[in-house]
Image 1: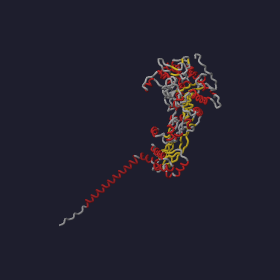
Image 2: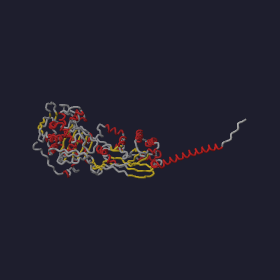
Image 3: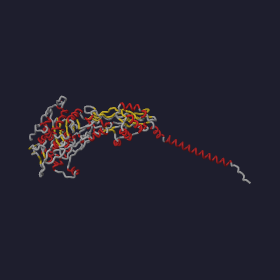
Image 4: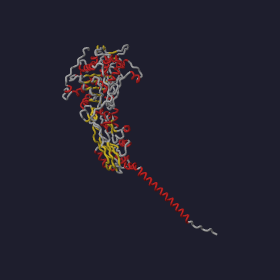
Length: 631
């Protein structure tokens, strides 16, 4: 008999369905509560954060680079200016496929592969979002037209008018002003990321680099609203940039031209100072270069030509050139001898044409091989007698010689605002033991007394040492800036003045330097012929290569670049100095004959008017110095 079919338990099924509905309802309720909680967290608790993120999706802060400060000469002539330039920029966030856009640009403008690769380097530089990158400078009208016609194919690219640096006088002030150039990767890491947003260039050398913080100014900003494509729809807030401070230099364009003309294209340097203030009136290093080449990026070919030139046009001879001073250092040695008491104005030394140390056979030559006989301080400076200064240096000894010449700035940086300046070298016993691991020899002291040996100076340091003779020991650091934003620069680390036991010793050296040019036997008397004012000066001829004992200098057997350097220092008017000039001509051979006339031209350019007459402020006749009675 078949089993009976059980009847459904409707109550049990109903209970099961109800339990399942309740479970589903609880699950839905839990999910709804979680969703509401998440919405509350996002829209209430994190409201400020997400509001800012949302705002940044449509609001951007764009930098407005400041206009760089203008640089003037002492007469108000503009030496460094800013001019508008049409440049091509790319905003990567608007470009989409940036490499493809750049490929299209290269085709439209017919650019080389090297130029195309430069674009990629520019894009790799760090930047802020929506900050444009300058790809090309100085677009011409044809290029601008081609870009405008193909704008639909070049998203993110814009032609913008920007200011770029310009140097109206090119080479004339290249080594003093320096130049600006595009910011490289290393500089970008050290510069203030806020202040330099949107700035493409920075000072590289000279005044442009030393006074970069003052010349740059302060960046401005625009808060703009953009659409989905990154186009600016409206400006929400604007903060004007603060232009850089203008700087007035102490340089004089007319004197600078006169100095460059006097150098006549020869390799060398000229620096002119105002002894009572330290202001640099002229600074010329030849050969020079055009700083405008560096402003928007110099080509590899042009830079290689400048870098590899045998004449080194990029080398600032005034600040970095290291030369033996030769006899131009003798006035400072004379001051050291007088103040230390090892000589006086009446001290006489016999010159047979050479000098010998006791118990030594070596002969240290005088430039005048026949000798000058008995000489005192006055005639020793006038005739540039080597034997007298060999003896003076021997009596001083290396320690006192080092200490005195260091007080004149030899072997140290002397300028206030020229970061490129080399310190030079004033040797000592300790220096030689530390660098050469050798003792100091007496003969090395002798040749220091005539500006040879290990001693090395820059033309600026030589001019400053001479300026201290002119100012009777009052220190004023050489400086290029006369006014910065209308205010004079301040020397926070002034050098101590040179105070002698007998102040009249300055006058004794001054008279000897005047005799160099105005005495009938003066070594550079031809330089002062026809002068309307009295000049105090000293010539110098410094060896480039050593000459063996017993041999004489033979220019015919010496290559041009191994010939002696010609130097001359001078100041005028001698009794009331208003200008100090130092000249160095590489391989010029004769300081008095070659460099002396250059100093005279610079002095005339400063002291005489356009008609060739002494300017009114210097016109008071000055008495000619007489030889001291004891001499």
